Amino acid sequence: MSKIEEVKAKVEAGKSKLIPGLVQEALDAGIVPAEILQAMVDSMSVVGDKFSAGEIFVPEMLIAAKAMSKGVEVLKPLMAGDSSSSLGTCVIGTVAGDLHDIGKNLVSMMIESTGFEMVDLGVDVPADAFVEAVKNNANVKLVACSGLLTTTMPAMKEAVQTIKAAFPDLKVIVGGAPVTPEYAGEIGADGYAPDAGSASVKAKELVT
Ligand code: B1M
Image (cartoon, rainbow, N blue to C red; front, side):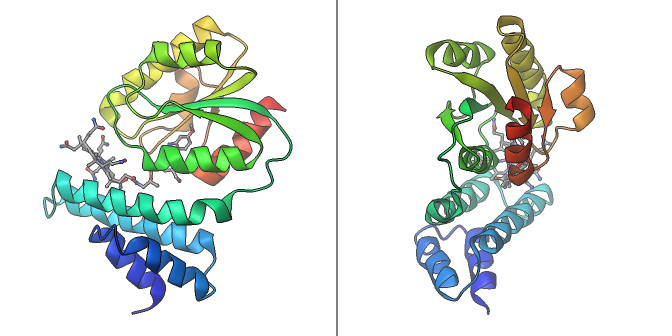
């Protein structure tokens, strides 16, 4: 089994303790961080498919997520870009009722790498908490809302509309698997991105 296949298999199996070492071994073998990250993202898709098929349950999804997060910790310093230029502060969070944070963390990492200071509110963030964070932090130029559940799409709408009502000129970007560009436009967001890489490009575009 190649190193990359090993990383994939162990993320799927939720082997958190083994992942940092395996990711390091993959790096030492010359595999680039983006490829290792993609392998782990692919593992999470497999995990999601197995969950949909009733082959695994919430605890297995949770331990796989934990394993992936351990791998991301190793990659993070290597993926951070040149953030010497400052584009302002970006407040980020996963919307109310939603506990998924891996995608949000990747988006945060990539937006940070383009030159934003990040204020991460975590998961299950009520609309008002985004507004409070904008008030309580200096130089906020962007709010980023993530959501992974179709059931929390109304919470995303509420977040965007509450932020926009309080700060009409502040830019808001949204994303997450159930979000479409059409939905983003419909709820009044200024930007949408399908993945972490394009979120960082869009984030910069929105404030410059
Ligand atoms: Co959940 N879960 N989950 N889950 N989970 C999904 C999302 C699901 C698709 C699985 C499935 O059924 N196949 C499904 C949602 C179905 C739907 O609504 N359409 C689902 C469900 C149903 C649930 C529960 C309801 C299960 C239950 O309890 N019966 C429950 C809900 C809990 C809650 O939130 N209230 C639940 C719970 C969990 C865990 C807690 C166990 C765990 C999350 C742990 C954690 O995040 N710390 C979990 C996991 C791990 C998953 C899957 C397997 C993996 C998610 C993930 O991390 N993917 C997921 C299946 C799947 O995604 N195929 C699933 C990897 C990550 C890198 O991708 O998050 O999509 P993603 O992020 C991408 C893009 O979406 C985008 O960029 C990211 C990186 O490229 N993106 C943005 C994300 N945010 C963005 C913001 C942007 C721009 C782009 O701008 C601001």
